[in-house]
Length: 81
Image 1 (tube, rainbow, N blue to C red):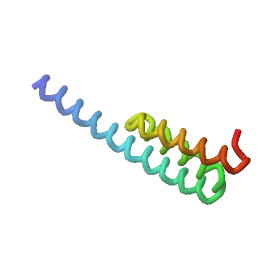
Image 2: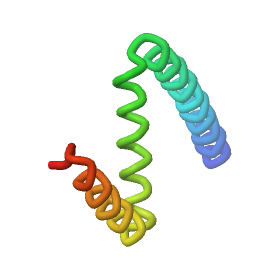
Image 3: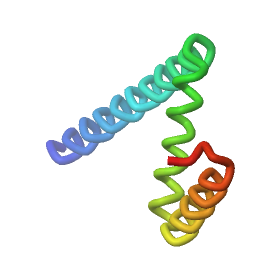
Image 4: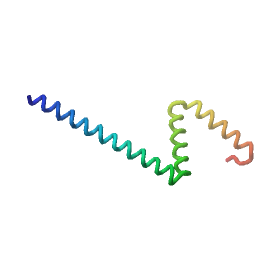
């Protein structure tokens, strides 16, 4: 009987943690939407950096090739670094 009580308590704790994670995900989504509407330039920069980092993590050689290509293209128009 005591073991059954521990199992039920563990299930209750896991259910509460699941709902807490869902609430945090909803709050994060609302904050992302608010950031997109209020601070659009910074939000677009944040999303671009996130995509670039994700791409760098999963496809490093392609990302490095695109970075080199963009450096060559921007150096050709006189605005390069």
